[in-house]
Image (cartoon, rainbow, N blue to C red; front, side, top):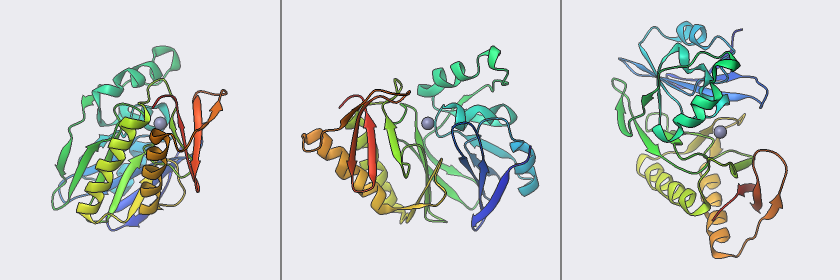
Length: 241
Ligand SMILES: [Zn+2]
């Protein structure tokens, strides 16, 4: 099965895979020497073929986190994931599920040079403990996986951190986005990019939860449980402070 893809900025592509938990977005950033693929989707669509139709550069894959809708296509690539999320990936690729398992390498943080294009990789624990974001000063975009999503941000999974640690991640992300002049956030599931107000609003909401000014309503159903709190159009589901 092929995959929809489109050019979203110079040498930057968005790849979209439909799936059981909704659409998932992947991004392909081309440098002069290599290409960086951010996330690998459900592993059902022919991602390798789509990537090769765009570039013949060597490709490295950085998974933003270990969840099955982001990392299951890893087997076709030179794949990296933070060690903190390895358990999540391994349980999603148990042999009975029939998805080939990649030999994941530890994902390095800091600067990554693609040849004439340097990106910055940040560890941003929250949604999962091994979540990362990638900042690209060329396109002024940050690729944020599920750390920030337009609908609900899920910190209510057993593998999530509490609100306090998530807030620290958002503050680090905000500081580096300001340093790099980042103007838009590209997430794992949104149809459109988000602007920097989204990040500021989630910081405000997280602070209010920690200060006791906002108290979430209890959520019992589904995988993501705990409390649902809102500020304007922003929503966070969390288990712990
Ligand atoms: Zn996720």
